[in-house]
Length: 256
Length: 265
Image (cartoon, rainbow over all chains, first blue to last red; front, side, top):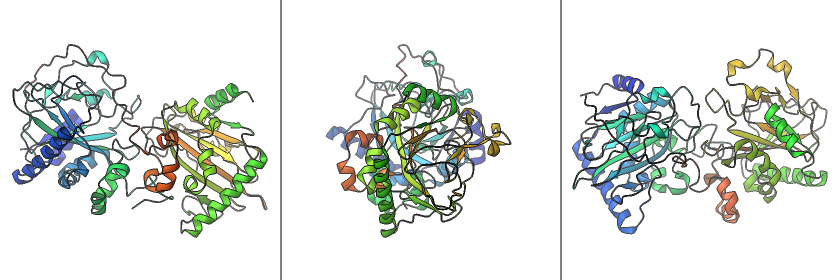
């Protein structure tokens, strides 16, 4: 299957996304899956769940798990996975920031998300290049039936957000086996699909990266488990905003 | 002062001078506190010279104003300052930085730039940042007033900058206690202080739209004691909490009949 990163980068440019299977070997996948579902179940039991404004508001089956970095160091490995980070760099350059890493788990009967582009917080007209990139890690098989992310291929070339009357535009379900990554540049229109299964949950972990001029979605300086920063690699320090130039300074210099 | 006329001037020219926001005595008191803050910075090992940012050691930079002294925490949220900030940026803004640049005789000019242009990719259609520049001395061409190109906040690309931009720049003039409001897109440079013995102390309150990353990492730089004492409003404006860059869905709505066509490939 496709492991040619030059081709993957080209797909992102042409279609707005690419799918790369078999990025996580089964032992790592199992470790990630176990950590994610444990965090999700803790959140549910404790009533810590937080809804997302773009999600379907009327079901209790879909679930978001935020700030995964603080839940288990295994998620930091995903953030700086060499293959994923290589595509982040070829799409938005370096240095980049990690805006967030969160999970989106659809449940049986779960409703779909609003069609959107990830950079809709940037006022239009947009610059000519993508301002962010989303790397989705398929923790379970993504299928049309279980709520795979749906995308409008090529919509990034419109370089604008969808209008309300485009919300039901034709979209493709991004079917991919567990262990794949789906990389979407920030202008491509997409949404979570409906989960029409009787019993399947479908988890995806979304690592969202931006160019370094944007405020991060998660305030890492407020919420990150200090151990993650303490043991962070140089790349992770950059992604979190601790090693920085120009913006995000402390006393006129980088905080780390 | 005709406030509306000042706001129009800001929108038309990219900047305006708001006179006498502080009395001369108040400005002098702030200037004293600024020098105390500079000394304190040096004492705790935070350098006040940044060669590279400035061409030589005649500029004194103080980076930690909000931590240093309550007077700066008051100025950054001065109602008149906020009035101009919200006029240009809407109420959806964050405090990006608050620093001082004291130009001593012999200090030279920076490179020509716009604050927004060095951060945000072109084209620039809207103001995403603003500077409120507090003048603690009388400021004019002689002691290094900021020089700017009038109307240049309307330029959408760096290549639109006229070839003779430097020659067409003008210095602002303001008395101690005034502030200068500058659209983040306005092309400008610090002036050279060619006076014999006059200091030129300016405070730069820099504010940006809430989706833009702040210049200063307030979470990592303010002490717990300082944060504890801040009002909820100031905490929100500093972005210390989980505010901003999350208003993703404001103008979207659920479409009642969403249908899919599965395209197979």
